[in-house]
Image (cartoon, rainbow, N blue to C red; front, side, top):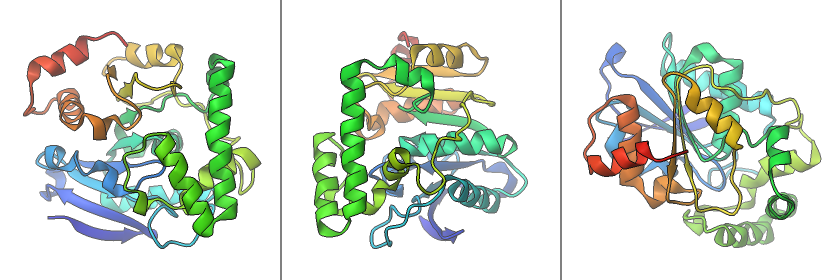
Length: 284
């Protein structure tokens, strides 16, 4: 049964095992334009083994006032959530999109609080190497959708919401349009204006603990460089997997994604093992 907690003004949905020190906690952080419901297809597979804590990022929930949350404040609020959920014991992180960017910064600042990372479709996308790696057309595409969303955040209201939903459709986002609003766009506003503390001081992300990185190949723009993926894959305990999916691969192919995660964690899988083994064996 799902329980709802509110920690540091962040809504957390808690599912799964509640057997004290024997239950590891998996903190699941979404990106744009999603909420904690992004992980609905993962909880039934993972909750028998873990305490699954799905949080909705500040400003992303329906009905919340539009407010740009500075990175330092967001990281501190994540720290409070993690320490409240799992006092004295590190948690695992499952991250997607902006959840990756925020989660990676959290790990770099608080490595003792995280035991393992599952990153989905965002790698070193904030690095200079990544910017140089993209082709001119890809750079233009990234600027186009991000600037549009930053403008929608400034406009806000009904028009801002319609602009945001239009872009979500263009990007083939599977999220319910009724849950999408302009208040979710503040990370793009901060990115392109440098306001509210900016994101220019982000630490380069190199995982300090075991990491599973899963990405989709069916996208116009990759969100990692090959060099970064190779470095991650070369570290003991790490794995890099490529799925025949788009950016929201956990929604497009939930059974395969869930099985890959369980296999990496060394837990039983209820899926076609041959398909999982083929995925693991595929080149990165």
